[in-house]
Image (cartoon, rainbow, N blue to C red; front, side, top):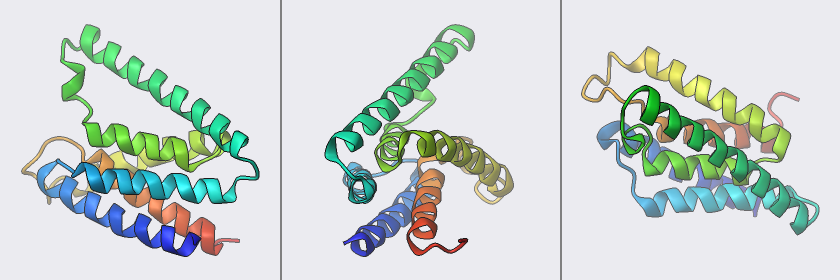
Amino acid sequence: MPIILLIVLAISAAIILLQDLKDRQVHLVVLLLFLLASGCLQYSKSLFFQIYILESAVNTALILLMLGGVALYFKFLKGMDPKQTLGKGDVVVFLAFALGYGIEEFVLQFVISLVAALSLHLILKRKYTTHTSVPLAGYMTIYLAGQKFIEQFNFFS
């Protein structure tokens, strides 16, 4: 079962990346498929359903807290509409991270994926000059899928 979920995760991550790079819009069905595969992979590793739900709830609360801070920052300090800063796809990918990891691992992987996405965008932005925004959902899904493959097959242990 985890192999099938990993394949679904990888294929949906590739589709999300391609759509995000091309149009900065990702189809909701692909995002939800990615979210479901990420959550099911973590649930399959969980000992108890209650622990999985508790960890997912704490992670989701952290995401909501961060999104609230970002919204306040852009609204009051930058004078921008918060809806222009993050897309709906980005929020769904954040939720995929929240459902895809335990609490400690979530914080670490989430921060690393954000730094990796920004770094990758700075490296590749000359090639993709048609858009000025960062394809955050695309880069983060590739990171999450790659990390789950490494975790599943113990590449570095």
